Length: 396
Image (cartoon, rainbow, N blue to C red; front, side, top):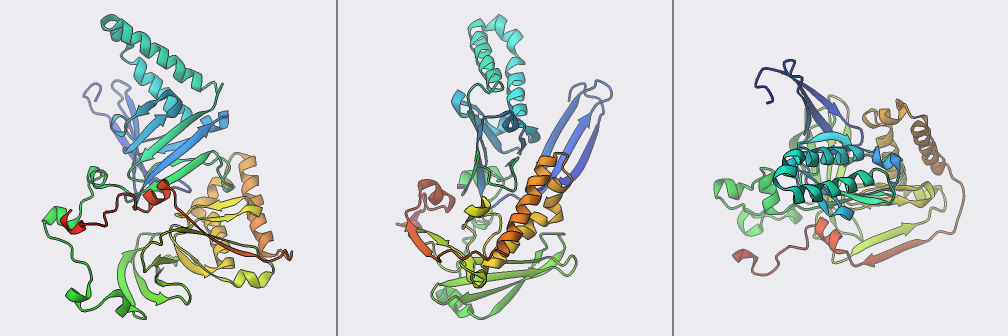
């Protein structure tokens, strides 16, 4: 695009640990020396958008790796400075790299601007100095990344421990955002209305499927090979109806199971706290929904709702699932082969903590605490409840 002659583009499909597949694209022209690097997501668009809010306080925070897709907007809150998604291509960079690229973009037209619009050039020069000051970390600043495709990522340098400086919020996309990503409903494409599974039209409801095992084709999450998923609706005593889905891949041996609610969303959220008294408590049945997070304060461990998906298991099974995910070869090499011995050591210590917790014979008083609470606006937004229309919806 610089000299209009032929250059070479190299493509590499890779996977970033704790993230997903990416296509790296590197272009170089031997005629004029022009170079350009971009990334594109190699995975499907996420079910929800994501918003990362990072408090930058130290040099280590400046060096955090950041993955930006083509749909990622960037905002520096203290400077009220926003970079729209349409103005930058996807890339793998750092927090400092984002600031540097912003500075370069603003300086690009300054020579001409100083001649034609000197006052504007002076204001931009002053703003550039503010951007440079951010890198000196005289005061903390806030970086917000928002991606409607759910395909951006901010490195946690303290993984697998809790990232106290970075908060991830998932949100449901609206119709305009779906269209921006090229996602349309069948009704929008064909003009045909989708028909729900109702007794009046199909002769049965989900209740009639209870106890039946349904099977449908899918692709393995591990190797991408065709396999089958078994689905069954069941009723958990003293709780409600749930849908259990299990997948086994004959090619790579991957086994997954997920649980989804068969009913609606409750009016309030719920927080359950339980102290483990003895080893028998590890056998407690446990239902984790796909919007449920897990926290073990004694291990300084917090697992977000999207990390383990929904599942019906035991306390021990859930902890083992966390350990297995950390030990997965796709994830573990970021620590096992890390050049930073400190990162490698903290990962190994954390795994040891999990092992010790499974052998812990301490017997504190057992308490089971169940608390219902009103959801916040952001939590309702993640569930898609804020804009839901419950009146005259047939007319909308």
